[in-house]
Every structure is written in C-alpha cells, then in structure tokens.
Image (cartoon, rainbow, N blue to C red; front, top):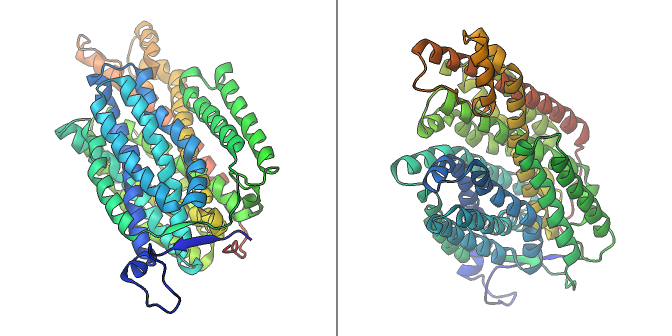
Length: 530
C-alpha cells in the first residue's frame, strides 16, 4: 500500500543511535506549524492588501478599470489552476521542497511587481505570483497532515485557520498604512523580508515528507484538463460581473469549464496515478467540507467587499479608518479558529459547521438594519458574528477535508481545500457585485426622485448606476448644495438597497449551509494513515 515517508534528518542514523539535534528539531510538529504559518501569513495578507492598493495602482499607472481588474484576476486564475497540482507535486517529490520554492518565488515575484512600472508588467508578475502561491498553499496543510498525529491535527488546523483569518482581516489596515504613508509598491515589497525569514526558518526546521510508493508516471493529461477547466470556470465567474450573468460569453466560459472538469473526473477514474484521486470523495465528510469551504469564503470575501465599499465610499472613511472599524472581525476570528478546532475535536464537525454558518447567517441578516448613517453600535455586532462564524467553519471544514484524507494525499487534499476556497471567494465578490448592481439599477431613479432630485435629471443620473453600485454618488462641484445633498442621499439609499439584497442572498446561502452541514456530515472514523 502507498505510504508517506518523513525524513527527519539529512544524516541517516542507526536505530540504536540517539536522535541528533537536527532530527529532534525536524520531528517537532509545532516548529513545522510555525514555519508554515510564515508562508500562509504572507499569501493571505497579500490577497487583502492588494485590494487596498488597486485604486492607487490605477492612478499612478493610468490603468483602465478593465486593466485594473486583471491585477486581481490574473493572480486568481493562476492560483486556481495550480493549487491541486502544487499539492500533488509536494506529495510525490517533497512537500518541504515545493513549499520553499513557493515561498521564495512568491517573495521574488512580489518584488518584480513593485519594480515593473507598467500595468502589463504588474499583471504578468501577478500571474507568476499566483503560480508560486499554488505551490505554497496546499503544502502548508500537507506538511501539517504528515507530522501531526490525528488527535492533535484538529488543533493544528485551528491555529492554521487563525493565521489565515487574522492575516486576511489585517490586510486593509496594513495596506492602508503602506499606501497612505509609503507607496503602493510597498504592499508588494513587504513580502520580501517575510519571505526571507520564512525560507530561513523553514529550511532549518521542516522535515522532508513525501509519498514513498515508488509509482511511476505523472498524470499530464489530468493536469491539462484540470488547469483548463478551472481557468475557464474562474474566468467566466470573474467576467460575469462585466459581461453580465445572462450573457452568452459568461455561460460559454463556465459551461466549457464544467465540461472539462467532468472530463477530468472521468479521466481520473481510469488513470493509474491520478492527479486528484476520486476515491477521496468517498468520504462524505470530505465532500461536504469542500462545499462548505467554498460557501464560507463566498460569504466572507463577498461581505467584506461591500462592507469596505460602504465604509470608504458611503461613510467617507480612509482605508486605515475602515480597517480599524473592522477590527472586531479580526479579533473574533482570532478567538474562533482555535475555539472551532476545540469544538470540532469534542463534538465533531457536524456540530461546529452548522453553528458557524448560523452565526454568519445572523451577521448577514443584521446588515438589513444598516442605513447610510448607521452608528458604529449597529456595525460591530455583525462583524463579531461574522468573524466567529468564519473562523469556526474554516477550522471544521479544513479538518473535514484534510483530516479525512489519507496522509499520502495530504498535499492534494490541501490543494482541493485551497482551490474551493479561492473559487468560493471569487464567486462571492463577483456574484454580490452583480446583485448590488442589479438592485441599484432598478431603484436608483426612484430613490433620486424620492430624495428631491427633479425627474429629468434623475433619469440622466441613473445612467451612473455603475458608480453608485460602488457607493460613489454622481455629484459634481457645479451642482447647487441642496441638489448635491439630494443626489448623495438618493444614491446612498440605492446603494443600501443593493447591500440589503446582497445580505439576503448571503444569509439565505448560510442557512442552506446549516442544513447541508447538519444533514451531510456523519461522524465516523477518519481516513487511514497510509
């Protein structure tokens, strides 16, 4: 039967020889957890600081909106296409090797982004950064799965999830400070010192773990089918916002991607050394955990996206001020991840997953009480509920996916988890932006006239629905003060209509997640260690 080997020392020792200091160091699972936390922190922080830097990148490099979208989309597409491949390469050829390659490449490509000086250069190096992120991310969980015993793996995943959640939530604050006081390039340069420390520490403490099954061959056809399928699906999702969700182009891209993924699944059942073993999905807990992971990040990234628009564009806060206002979310995530791991270990994912999704549903429905001038007292409770829910679900779903996969497939399972996470986040942002845009478009004229804007002018201003969907009122300096106030009021109401519609959609999805997790999870024995 295939197995996983863990090399704890570069120098083989006889069974009777005392363990060397290097062997003891590399045998310490908590040092492995610290090492992978560096790389995880770098990638997750980068994902959220770039969102803050995008407006400044657009201004300095004179980028169009479409070009600026590709700063995010190029990274997302490359990452989604390589995550499962990165996990498979680590499982077969060495998880430490590909983790270190990912950290080093991610840091160096980040520096290249800052030095590029043009939008094509930024986009190209962002895609390269995504490739290295695809090598790094799945092997963080693969390394943990290889060194932690089952009874402690849940707590390790809880800490992993805490690092992920906190670094993502800190992004707006760190990014805001760097963009305001240094430059947009600095949000990428910051990855270099983090990467240097991560490489040095990881090379010192990480054991080399890989499969020791001796199988020959590599599933090249599977790599191509999966990469093209994921690229097509994610491309259709991210372009659905601009092309329209009912357009032929959107559905053609998604349809072709789904067809390629179906062909990939069929191929994987017939090849000797599959890239993604379909036997993993025999575990109902793993399958449900995969769906809930996607839903979890659909809600988190989608909600954070429109909350940041509300705080910055409607309330007029700076990026730093907006980041500080969302600190309750960060702090709640900090508490929730280890709490979720402890609850999962004690009561099982069947308890923790529905509880986390229920907290997120409560957070989303609470957003229905927000108005254009809500006090902060109405804001922080949903932030806390959202942070608690996301952290708990991330711990439970990560444990369900990676913990129910055999150790030999730990990297692949980590890649599967990271892939569904990224696709869920992409769907959340794109779908909710479309929901907001549709609701703004249908109510903007009515809200403008209701606020006192003359009907003819309201009809013309309604053409600026795209700006209003971003929380920006179509006012101009030459407007009389009374008219300007009326336009701002009506635009704010239309935007809040869109926010409320998005809150209903996300809240309803969370309730579906509660039902799926409660009905679909079944406690039982984990996958074997081999």
